[in-house]
Image (cartoon, rainbow, N blue to C red; front, side):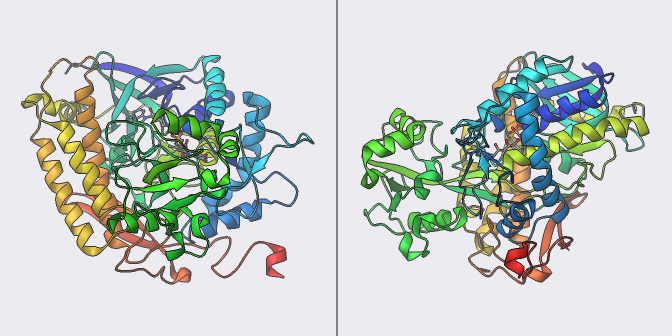
Length: 574
Ligand SMILES: Cc1cc2nc3c(=O)[nH]c(=O)nc-3n(C[C@H](O)[C@H](O)[C@H](O)COP(=O)(O)OP(=O)(O)OC[C@H]3O[C@@H](n4cnc5c(N)ncnc54)[C@H](O)[C@@H]3O)c2cc1C
């Protein structure tokens, strides 16, 4: 077997906020350890942390509190979050933001008195979203990248992880990777591995996450037999730009602030329609507005490209151009006048609340495997608050970096990889070269349409059954389709094939979990079960790969900090 071998103490998969924070913390905790960050893209240039516009939620200013941030997270998550994880998120965010400013070198916007400025974000009872204009992610990821570069941390850029590899006795031995540049297979033996590949629901017709994300991390975890939680929970942002099928700008986010500032949504008949759905009109929460737009689209009241319009001009074009310069520029690049005219928008898949089950110290069921960022589950329950995403990746990435060296000290040593598994995984990845090339683009389009139409913003029994049947057919067709060019160096068609395989596998889990949840909570809406169900007996779904197929079960949510109907806020309780 043609396989290069490397060895490292800690292997981190992904170079977003979670992966880079883990690397820095692990190096600080144990500088003698060899640490490697492996990433599908280039360090600092890939993943979604770089794309963060809005900001970072943290309870810093007088009047706010960790308890308030926690209650917003729990209520926003519709009582499904794992409360210990949510508590860790909101309490550790304070230290992490201070670390970002004082040790990593980020500069966030400030109030005149020098305190950090917090802006308003939907679903929160306090303006706690710390930011750097609307380019917060670039500030965070660039500074993290510089800090990683300045340390002896090994980088495997443009390396795609394809399998978590066990030893013969089932311990974690390391990760099989493909060097995208050469096409060579590389087995990286590691004492501890962090999964931080960033989730990312890119299997929907309209989506926001970066193109390098194709759910590989969760697909690997599923194949390793690990439990995935809340897989039905896909967050849609209501206003993705709709600029036609020929541009990758379609699906990218037009920020929530547009609706917050007083923007109107009009259907294709030029009628303002939000009054038909919610008293808060355009300021209703993301899920409500997404469903309203979806309903207008299904009723055929659409714009030329099949969405609805956002209109800002009544607020004064000059004011809009000043307040939303970045958005106005983005729309102009696509031929739309946001300040003075109309822009076509559509709901767009934005964030994945589901993921690998973990403890508050980021450890998982498989000893030696840790998880952080959007690959992990439980922090957000049925809905993620805007601003809690980057807080999640940086908080838990840092925790993983603290914990992994301690774990290695207590469990030292490498485990020899099971040669049969390694061989089978290499064969699995090379499988498409054994057949004639086919039309991958057509298959991808089928996947995007299936997920959009049948497992999307609004679901029901018939649609989910149809979606699952279509996913089975797509997978069968994919497995019968090859890659024409058999050169492995920078063979992007091969990687498209591998992307599609991960996306199809995880899409099926999303659909099956959505079938299992017979109520409507947060981002998951079933038109045949529109009620949210009894909060006090809330359950979360768990998906596992079994020999006979995917098994979906559910388990009760433990209300370890607060029960439905109660609050941790003293003034509200009194
Ligand atoms: C447009 C946009 C705007 C957003 N705005 C906000 C906001 O304002 N506030 C907020 O809190 N959150 C926001 N989010 C969400 C937030 O960006 C993410 O939740 C968070 O950054 C995820 O961090 P992460 O480290 O888990 O993953 P990412 O930053 O996405 O990094 C994932 C990494 O994994 C790598 N990878 C993927 N597959 C593999 C593989 N097979 N092998 C090796 N490496 C792999 C990728 O290349 C990348 O390096 C936004 C997201 C988007 C898309």
